[in-house]
Length: 489
Image (cartoon, rainbow, N blue to C red; front, side, top):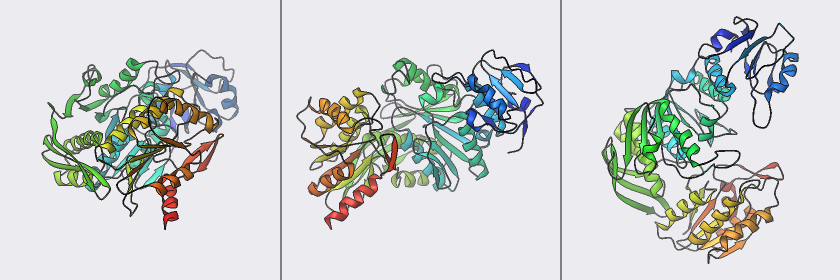
């Protein structure tokens, strides 16, 4: 990228020029002091853990030409331009958009928010767009996907500078559309400040991400999700969710709805389909889209994801036959992902890692009348113990056999995590075994599976690692299943 004048970066901000010139050339933007090089702008953010202002002497030493601050600072070096703003995170988002010349505005943009279904719906929408012969980039939990290349990200909604850079990369790669997961944390932390989406989507909401480092309560969580509908032109919402009217109460956009009763698109005649272990759903759509729809993923929640994606596709003007074909053949890594076994039992992989999502996926499998459900799961270390109790109880109630194992123990002892899970299991009459090594747990499940059984691997989903004592080790659920099946040969 070429150098940009500071006044260009500040054109959509309220600010105070403390010292220096608005004509100062900026070679790039950084919010991490360690990444600052000659001529860059440093955004000093007073974070909850680290205050970026204390690194100002370091970044000046490194050659920063501009420092943007949130509070009064003394900077002796008069050659450095200093700008003061009220909200550093929001300023970083707007300055980053300006630095990359507003790349999101060069694509048709779709933002998707909700507790569950964001990733799946994102990939459904992407498939509809690309099967229509267009190009579409993705930002979300599974990473950033641009023309087949996937880059892992730390957050569902990346930091604003990184997000704008990804948008720039999409435009450079020829993407005409962009679809992204807009997390409540992403909204709260102003990572999407200043963005205007062409379409905003609400899947559903239930209590999650509530705690000291996330949202203080459900009301704040809901409020953050609702802000998307003040940042888009058209909102598409799930009218079957009990909170949908609260989500759109302050909306400034046109609203379209989907659901199973009164809505702009209605699903009726819902069926579960099991074709030799390949699970899918079927429904009849009327309204924004008309006709029979097959969603190539199991579970009633995928009826909602499918309706949502169909609404987006139809409102984008995509051909009806393309929408139907894309939904029938959709594949989403780690989201009730079917792994072919060539045997009489099914194996599925899902990212469910809390009580609500675990209960949802296990109830989904019950809808297909399996011989038995065998659930393999653990829980993440350095996370809420409540999640462990709830997952243990959900699996104990809804699976025929639980195999308790490791997930990402991080810096905790895996056996301590398993003891917490057993607290939840003890509230049920569920049968369980403990096998701490995850590969061994998968081996055990496959060896003991019978015709008609469904094995579900919970918690890891698309991840390709296990974090143990702070170190990430390669681990893939798909490879673990392949290894287990090879042992049967």
